[in-house]
Length: 240
Ligand SMILES: C[S@@+](CC[C@H](N)C(=O)[O-])C[C@H]1O[C@@H](n2cnc3c(N)ncnc32)[C@H](O)[C@@H]1O
Image (cartoon, rainbow, N blue to C red; front, side):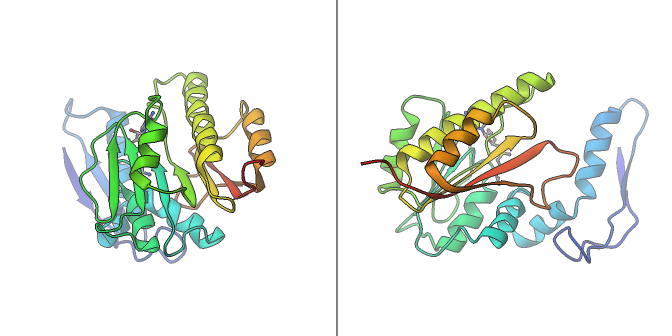
């Protein structure tokens, strides 16, 4: 398998003003499946992937948080952040940079059952967020109530659309319960969900506990993806 780049480089972050990338993956018979070739071509031609290498982010997903933050101004210097489903670490990088987290005084804690190589200013827990002990471990590691709980968790897909959907919604619901039990009043909760159904109960809970709830589809989220983010804005605080 060989790759051939014929176009100009990405000049921006994937939006307006970005030059097209045209890398085609040539296949030698039998060496690569058509679906893998399509994925690789899309990856090589993705301006966000290209830009993440230039900017030093570990994931193209970093730009989803950057774009959401540009619109809603969630992240501020000095805040404490919990990042659920953090691997490979793009969101943690963005959060740690903006809040000014350092190794001496880390104020960003991430969790993932996948290993994440160390990141400056980030404490990482390598464990399943659904484990009963995870919430307390996250709070112990952060040492204070978070200003933001952000979750990009997605369940590994098995190809059955409805099952995949339900499993990711479940992660989102558990993340929302956690956020409601630990956030500072005035804090925010941002989580990945999927478009379509099965989230009415979750929306009701969020609307009861936060001043506003937005559905957000940042430009970095591929149009063809059913992925969508729920932003629950300004936690009202727990009733006395
Ligand atoms: C889309 S990736 C996150 C990308 C990340 N925001 C970034 O910018 O690098 C989703 C992550 O959620 C993690 N995940 C899914 N379910 C999880 C769970 N129950 N506990 C911990 N992590 C989980 C996956 O392992 C995966 O690394």
